[in-house]
Image (cartoon, helix red, strand yellow):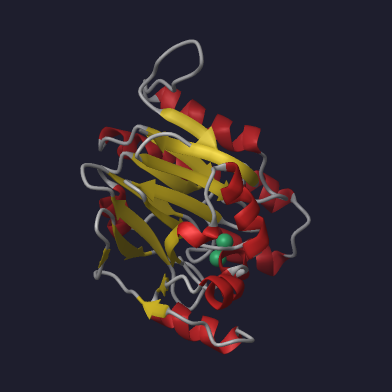
Length: 270
Ligand SMILES: [Zn+2]
Ligand SMILES: [Zn+2]
């Protein structure tokens, strides 16, 4: 791993989510939605380990975001921050009392020496839900997944973020024509469900106009999306607005990637 600042996703899908941030020697996770062992294995490929993680920031209490928390709390004693109502929900559903569980609600922020985390509320069908803007000193990065739509406060929070991890959950037609039961389709498509490829793509020109240089499409549905479909929706929307995407052979206005279900997807390495 090189550089003083390094942002990536380690796991990203409806099956489990975890993002990693390194800033001037401080290391953090956002969400721990797979086993602690899987996170540890992934961190090893980056030359680090859970023992070096300063804090875990949780977006909400759904299992694809907290699966590894109990072990992380019990064996590593890493401080965990989550919205108040999610803290209560996590506390009620955990087999063990989570140690070092801290309530963090917008508009409060948590400041470390070099890095600060500021949550913003997102519309989702959990007890509470948030995204995070991470201030790295001179620049900031943002993460927003699990949201039915982009609210004004989400758009404001993510403006001027150099790199953004954003949900591109499903293709609307694949979902509507797929095998999910009606109630689940209704939930995902609703205002408190998940962000479609179309809604995500429609938001990207705003982000880029506000200074975003690197975007990872995240939290893809395994059933109602594919990396190629999600990428094409955003790529074509950007192209229609005259925004060019960087590729190996030519520079462009923005780096656009699809975060894989498992494996490192780097947004920033400086
Ligand atoms: Zn969720
Ligand atoms: Zn989720």
